[in-house]
Image (cartoon, rainbow over all chains, first blue to last red; front, side):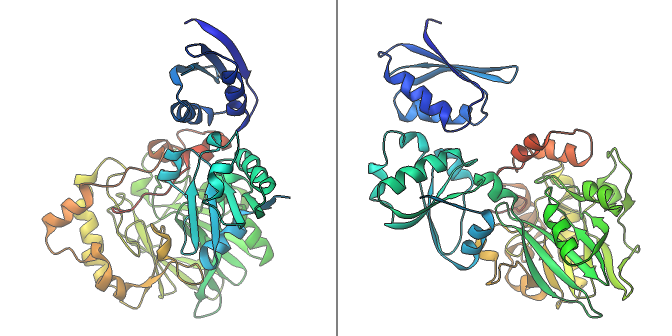
Length: 75
Length: 374
């Protein structure tokens, strides 16, 4: 996957992962892919719901050793 | 300045007051489970749609007294501060979020016992779980204990009670029992119906018909009554000849579901026999005290959930299904979704797995869903 930028929100709890993701997304161009790392469990549901409501696409996500990785394409 | 509101204060409003709630969790969580009550009005707007500003939501909110609620607290503080800056008076956030709400236990006195002593209902209002404390002469028994046992420990301390018995009416599938843990801590006896305990990894005392439990020296009796159906071991209890602790067999507005241990078809006839024969042969003056409520409307004006057995035989639809075939359909078809993580919760209650406190909290999120109707 052609990742434009990686955002590390490990250790941060809600609402910071999404606040930071939104800020990073604002600086990208349509079609760019943002990779987000998070340890907050709530981020899984919230990032997918946020992507939908703001017109981005959550391409994929997975968990590795307690770290959640998300790939979101800007709409 | 935004102010924190504790779950205890929110519970008060749910029972007897009013509150406007802005729930900022995502839509699916809100639809699944939220704070409800007669005087509670709530709207949902996820916090991530409010990061840039709250202007869009202001027109839907009152000018003063708004409680902002989220899963754990963080997002509700952020949104509450934004509402405060936007000019709303008295903005609160729920301290500890829905996690704290799910764990809060509200003690309500149900009544006095004949020879002294009394019985209390501990209402876990956020999840719809009801547990009981029976006390007499400085001794206490706790029935269907919640995972968070601190509320009972505090109560026992304040009232100089020694906890002697921890009793579970059945192996729970919707919440993690605090029975075993508090029994270990206080040297109390942990009672469990043997037919629900075939796979447990710890020792326990068998809760069985004929083995009455006595509290205090005034002989408050707890008589176990075998009433299978929700689980194969489900055992009701008659306390002091006045109260019928019906576990998950009979609720005020519904009846227990037989499917959470995977044996719905097998247990239908047990459930029917327990309700229509065993319960029907008991005194109709007994006050039914169930282990759950489904709707907040089941709470009376003091926040208690209770009803005379005779009244339930008149009004509860689950007790008034004439044909066995119809009954079978009612308790096996079109059931609500199962409680969250119910398999893991059963395994935890058997002692087979030992999740961390955080994991246990997550497993218990959401409503109890132990009845055949929502």
